[in-house]
Image (cartoon, rainbow, N blue to C red; front, side, top):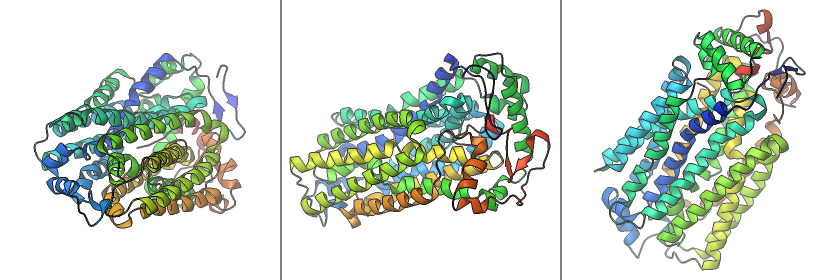
Length: 532
């Protein structure tokens, strides 16, 4: 937006900034971290449906898939070791998040992305060359460490480097790359499944492409002005700010960054501050969104799409092909969210998607309950196609709502003084419940059978009620004005916004606090998605 800062209703401001080539290139390079994350999500389900992979690492599961008589067709992939192959990545990511929190703050966003890239590359090498299950799991754990570091640094980098007016779209760029990574993995799996003996190695090894891109990108991009200023490199931060904004008129934004950094450093106990009454609404919503995001069932479908379709009676090729279709729908629908999130608003997308996901899952459950029996994996072609259509209907709804908004909304609501602690909790909760679903899904499928879709649809209903009553609209509201225009106007959360409740931050000058939240100086430091 050309021109100087425009006054906002409650002290916020828009600063002059152009969409410069360096911003676009930096965001594209950094967002390859999402590409790597998505590839890891998509590749696991494909290789675990390949006979050669199962024969080498999970012979018990392989023999079960070859048996003609089973207690239940839904149970042929039920194996804790097989689930650990998928879920270990997320448990490692959860652990790595605590270390990534430190490096993101002390070493910067750029170096943290480089560390993530190195973890990814080593993990890929171990997975592709794996000779036994231990080597395979160690590789997945290292990939998980990469996920922990990348998920901290990359979205934060994107948010801080982006001009305010395109913050929402660039935030979703990370999620878009996750979906592209899933689609890429599905396409690779479809091709490598036809290679006898070592196709699974190629599937796992091609993860080196996004890993290499992230590493190269981390070496090429500049660190964010926010990070540089936070670490005391004021002149370098000012130079980078001038470079990425494409204008010499950066003094107002620079001063805001310096002041915001000064105020943020006054918070001695951010996690203790996070638990104070005035900060509970943001914490509750952030945690609930992460839990609900996993209990939509989306990652269960994305992790195990080929396995799931195999279970439902699709042949191996048809299962992988169907997974490619759902991956493509995921990408297209995420692109839709980029163009609608700042127009339709967050609540509209979440509520519409809730209805769509609920109906799709109930219909899938009804079809499978009638047509797929325990001892039969025969599903008529017409019904099989309809199941794929319903899965795509479900995936599309998630991709333009709970996928990106589960991260975007927390990034818009935490005030500066609790953002580091709040976003760390957000990431940890997400990875924890991703691990739980990944580890439990195949066992749940075995015991619940078609009822697994009714289980997730029930959660979709609950989360839609939660959104209707408790999630406020944050569209087009500057982050520094959230307290006055969102929390104080909400029928329930306004009760937590007590003017007499003090905070950990001293009152001083332009950094005066109101309701315990920093106003004014917080604006440019608050365009954060995931924080350290």
